[in-house]
Length: 182
Image (cartoon, rainbow, N blue to C red; front, side, top):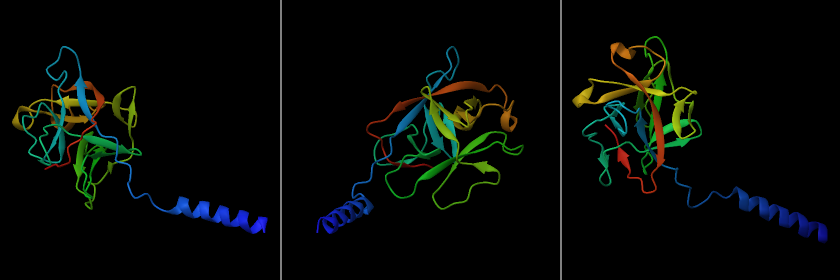
């Protein structure tokens, strides 16, 4: 009798663990600010538009559920996403190949990545966002006077000149605004 009660208790406990949570934990959202003292990009916030990341972009033209002119991000494992509370997350990728030269972009849910691109490898270390241990750089003269954001390590990525490396400082966003970026 004691044996069957013990087995029954174990079975019930294991069954309870197998039931999915009704309130899934929301991803921990954050924003990125450039740290490069004595430069034109110091304290510029990261934005997302036209499938790329930018600093000093006047308007990102995202469709948001509230006011927001900066990219809100979250990590899931080592993958980086643009924050959205719907089921259509936009995944950020890097192309370190000779063709991509460190370009950073994003794709809509269900779409394929460009050839040679990688999505796994994002992390936060000492308060800075990194890809495979490498920081970011920004290049001037992009859309609307913004600076396009690339992975560090390539001189003149995409033919850009005057690029500056920066620390991508992460700060938590306790009240993220859900957006679908262009």
